[in-house]
Length: 178
Image (cartoon, rainbow, N blue to C red; front, top):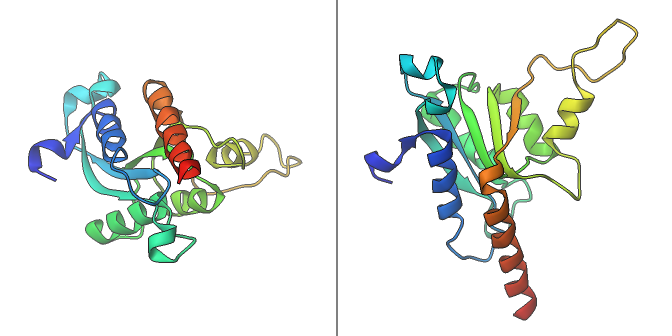
């Protein structure tokens, strides 16, 4: 990855991730990246113009690695933590092609990621959205909801949703043909 292409706005980086997933291989096209903010005083006035630098960009590789935990989110967190020299990524964001699953959601919470952006919702199983709904801070001491010491913000990237859905459909169609 060259220097000019590893930083940009969330919209730019989402398109970069989407382009990376176009490369065909045997794995389901799921990927994610961890990005850290680049100090820019103008971005505080206009958050959509905030600039980020990619720390990690990974794909899900459970078949290749023979490891059911080799999800892109886990892989991205591992690489970014090593680069930062810490088990926490408090000012970092994640951009993911799919809403993170329950396992990856736990890793996101433990890594203290600030925000998670995703292209498509998890439809067959609960994911991060479900956890955040169930784990919202209690309104009273009688409210027995799940409680965590960190709650990342979650955002659906509407602009990438349709193209990613087509990529997934194409991938599974090809699998049925073979």
